[in-house]
Image (cartoon, rainbow, N blue to C red; front, top):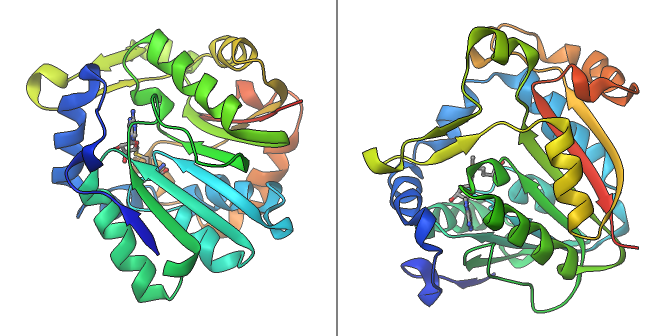
Length: 259
Ligand SMILES: C[S@@+](CC[C@H](N)C(=O)[O-])C[C@H]1O[C@@H](n2cnc3c(N)ncnc32)[C@H](O)[C@@H]1O
């Protein structure tokens, strides 16, 4: 495993997200436990869906942008031995945990960890896939989000694919007055937002990528999700493939391609 990180890896972090780096470093040890509260069904409906659809058996380089503690990177390295993962995050503590776990699971040779800001960093060589799960929603300005998308587009080989997972702002959110954006940076937290389908379409199109598909994962809030049996994943995957699923899920899954 090659790992290039110390505190922020010597790479600058955009000023809008400095508070988030500290927060992610503090939370790195608890992150997996926290998101585990969503329940097994959530992970089957979203992560397994991606791993089934991305065509990873073909092998090649995959750039996991904002990989966190490696909930996707580690699973991919274990399941798809021909894939090499560039795992990038601006939280050095999250990457430390990822590397420790990679060694423990015997997949360290398949993962290269880099501490960097995804709005500024590009892989040393073009990649076959860019995977970016639950990260775009934390970039606090439209400019940073577009910058990240632009970098992803430039990172791909011809025919290479971008797969995104973002939170959706649903009709139910609007009815209940759930804000589209929540900014807790001044209180030592981070920024988060939920996207509309139209916003995601626009982001992808402006990056020059060809939008192939947007689907929605029918995952409820953690409170209810925990109670759903994981066996329901087959139903979730079936719903996700239906045209118009993007308008029913709480999570949007996006597939785009470099022409
Ligand atoms: C909600 S977590 C998702 C982690 C992982 N992708 C997953 O799905 O489990 C968001 C991650 O994005 C990282 N992140 C946010 N903005 C970033 C940026 N500009 N550059 C690099 N990493 C960033 C955070 O440090 C955090 O680890």
